Length: 205
Length: 151
Image (cartoon, rainbow over all chains, first blue to last red; front, side):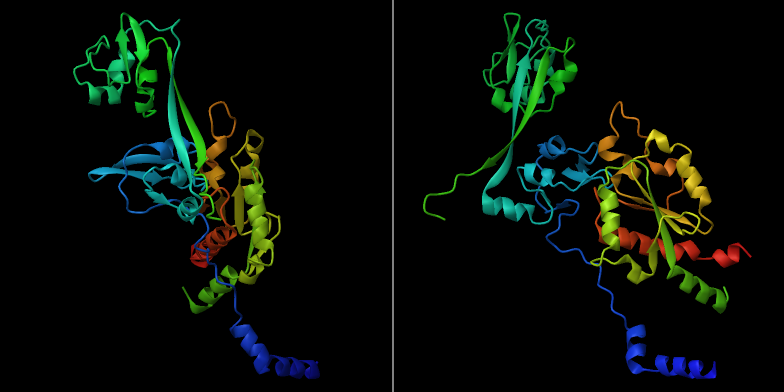
């Protein structure tokens, strides 16, 4: 009994043991900078294209809110899954996450949004609600009346002789305001997201 | 708080037992909790011991979006844990339901409604470092004032 006690004291008195016990080193909990975190603002101005919200696969993870004079995307933790699609989809590079932006620049990739307007002429009554509700139409032809008639050829769509006519599909921003305002559900907007990579120049590789 | 109590609290906070319960997740967060046990993150170097026994646990990790099968059962698990205790929600699912919380789905998040949650770790899945940091930040508050409030 007495001997083992002495043995224990001797064992604990070893400098090597004391050093290990007091200064045991644990690996620091650091996240490497190239890991994708929650998207952060880069400082560029948000142009309110809302492509981040359209590309986001998680419900309620990102919304573009008023910030001072302009707009700013806000990430909701607890909803965001850190996929980085908003970073890729933003045409202005407002957000950053890990090295997504650097990779996109190096490889010449981008996510392109385009919008198609589909109108079911069987259901359409030609009321012109969609033409008047459209915010792009309003910007182009502020004089457009309740019937959706317009003499301006630059509008996205207008009512001609009782029928809806889509003139400039490419100006659509995909806000779907027309869908909400349509009383018969005749108009549908398709948001098309496609990945694009710039062709590599001959002899550059 | 006497010095003895302080020392006791400090020692207790450096030796905690963790139980985890999966209330309907996709197993992504379970894998990240598993990664905490692996040598790279090595949760046991912080004195955290994971074994799935609520009777011995101090901290409960809740993973998943709370499916109907867990009605009452999660509260049962929570009641089995002796005081002092804390629950940590791991991942987006217990916080918001995230991808599973859609129209027509039967999940019932957040888990906060069913048992008290001390800390939430967002992410889909959260990184092992984030899970570790959450457990480490919770462990001090679990035993704080415990001796005083329960003489």
